[in-house]
Length: 174
Image (cartoon, rainbow, N blue to C red; front, top):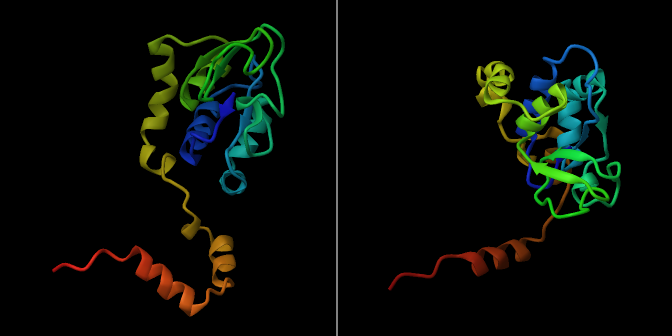
């Protein structure tokens, strides 16, 4: 499972790049749920949702999903590699053993059907390292055109702006 409010869009790009090295369908079940709709939209534009689908990953609506165990559950007694933040008993499913990992490690485990050796992991990670700056760049609201347009339509009263600035202004020096 790749998802959690603690992940960011770079983790999903990295997962997509690692999964693109898979020949055919994954031998495992992989669920992917980005934290926000904004991430989902951008990952779709960048082609990563197509990659997830090509290898047979199940994409969930953005949000908690398996991380909270409230939208979906794994099979009883499953072994799970997860990017969620907790692995206490029955969190993801009845009797599930959960191994916490990065999105990159979860991707390689999904490809191999097991936790990889360091050598196996590095084989997949090698390509990822070549474009790390682009892969791990953040997605900020002020860089998404549709969000900028929506923000431009919001009108804030001038008195409210002045009051906010006064409330958060640094104290005057004597």
